[in-house]
Length: 613
Image (cartoon, rainbow, N blue to C red; front, side, top):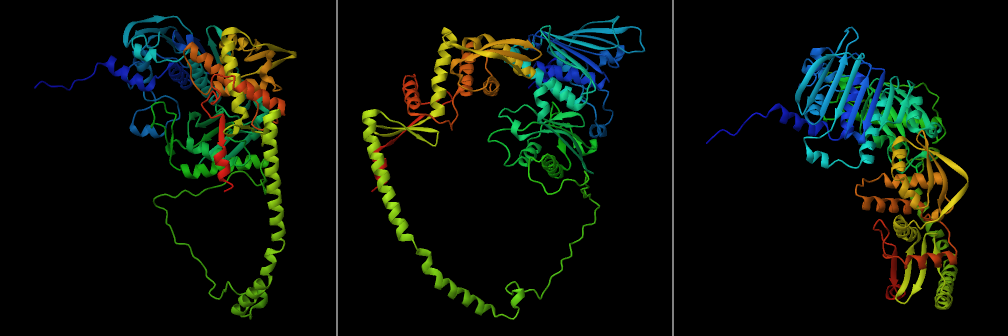
């Protein structure tokens, strides 16, 4: 029987590694930009074309590479960060496993230009699918210039599974924002299809946050700082009134490295207990610093999940620090937060001598003995209390009979009124409004209950969906145009679907600088402010990924219907309820909302009658 075990060629091994490290264009942007940071660059320019499919170029003014280093950087497991296994537990820089450049070169056409400041001439290397095409000297600026073209050109299955340009560029912006926030001392420029997306000058942390997310966030930020023997925390948390249903402004950094942590996120959310609106998430930008030997960053290929040695203690410190910051700003009740910041938490080691606690017990203490009557007999006291209860027992029922009679009378009158209203309904077609949320009306089989918000969502959804084909929705012009500032990701989304939004009645223009101008709104948008509708719409639309044109139109109609629908606690008069019901039953599917939730429920007459048997 022939041998079946064989060594994989380097090109195949690199493609397999690329499946872990390079999941989409954003992964390339992350790896190359982090390399530029490690090279001590203080100015980085990123050029993107077609959301990274055609070109990803990262230019930095860092230390650059020699001819030998430039060539070795594309070999697997080549790294300047690690010499021994112990170095894995003292890492303070970004990439270190030495797989990124080899993986990128395996699935794209790569051109590298690099020069060290002490060299007069640099090096140019061209690689296609792990194969070195050329290596030659070149005149270039100090630093490194990476150009990655035709990503996944030799892995068509992976290229086919890329999402739309808007989605993929959204992921690029996400990675860019994480790196830019962690490195405010570095100047960043980001261009997409030759259009400027970000121009971020060197700044402090607060200025960088405002530059990335817009001026509106500045009034939302609360400073947080805590220094302990285990970890140091600084940064900002958001005020609860600005919390949004859409996540996206929640950032943890450990030693200037972005990380995800559902565990620590829970510490933040718990600190906001009872001061957040339901289903909303506060913003936070928290920078943690810890001894590198107490964390493990090598548990995930993208190094975004970190293992902490003292994570339970850090959870408590983080929770307390957020509570303290909220208390200082009078957002939650506090006792005294004027104490000095910082506290020490003892950390037990293997050699710590643990002693049993000493507990003093007062053997003379009697829990049944009252201080003012030490000589009183406990048994006689209980008998006295029992007699007092028996004497007052009859008072418990005083007025009960009268209240019961009144209750019966009220129930009888209520039934009379209900019966009379049902009779009136047959003549005048009346509706009932219950808790400003449900519309009630009698039908032949019983009592029909309609959820007004879901009904309005269904009505608007079918109307919007039809309008995307017929341009039939009227625009209500604004007396004063409204300028709305968005973050880069939301701005790119709005501009891409701008034509579809115009068909739905939005009159808007790109104002530049991640801002749009609203000149008019759909006539069905009611009294809501443009910012509210746009924000709600973006929250809904950004919650999923859509590719085909048909799905995109449906997603826009759904998202806008939910954003424009009346609230669950809005009061309606009889005429408004009548119109709502008429429009609902003119829909193709009046029973379910666009999101598959039940709109109409009927309580049958037999069911009601059973309650009175």
